[in-house]
Length: 249
Image 1 (cartoon, rainbow, N blue to C red):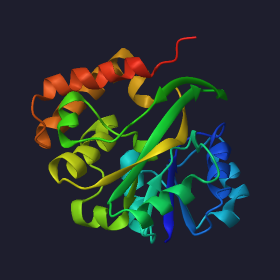
Image 2 (cartoon, one colour):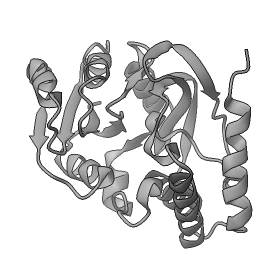
Image 3 (cartoon, rainbow, N blue to C red):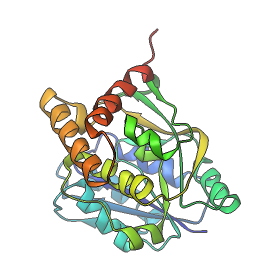
Image 4 (cartoon, rainbow, N blue to C red):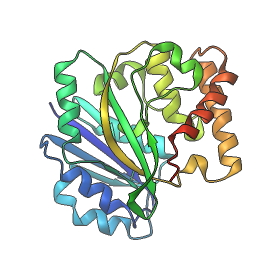
């Protein structure tokens, strides 16, 4: 089973190497790595070129958004399964992809997802939030539940059947996709109970009050489009769920 791993990047020269190394060091060998750069000017491309022998496809060109770049990569992918890893994140261990493949092989499912840890931006050993996903039922979406997108692996045929990422929901493009697949269309997913990804804090959707409000608005739009009942309640609970993820030491 071939797995297409996708990373899209723009000016992430400080962190892209950690991301790349976490993928090419996976013990599972049938990985097709696709890396889409948005035209970086900070040395990101020089880092990528160091690992070109391990990357099936490198493309550098302007794009409309992160989700536009992801859609380009999906079109290039040939793997049976697709995973997406952000340029400043890393796979938690070297057997993550192996574990995902085993889940697909042993279970009749359309998707696999797991848990995610948030770390300080400049120190991946300092965990500040723990996102434990858990299994879900469809009604959970009414209360803001979602799996961590960086841990989500989907069969490639899903994108052919239900479309790629919408560009109409700002930073909530991944959330809209998740609602479309699992809430509106009842696709099946297997929960892999382990930390799959370590994510650096400081993401785009939470870097200012304006960004947080805009993301909440797009979340609401995504819920309404995908027939989630009581979308206002869903948006509120989606924010509140984050509070219990923080580590207090």
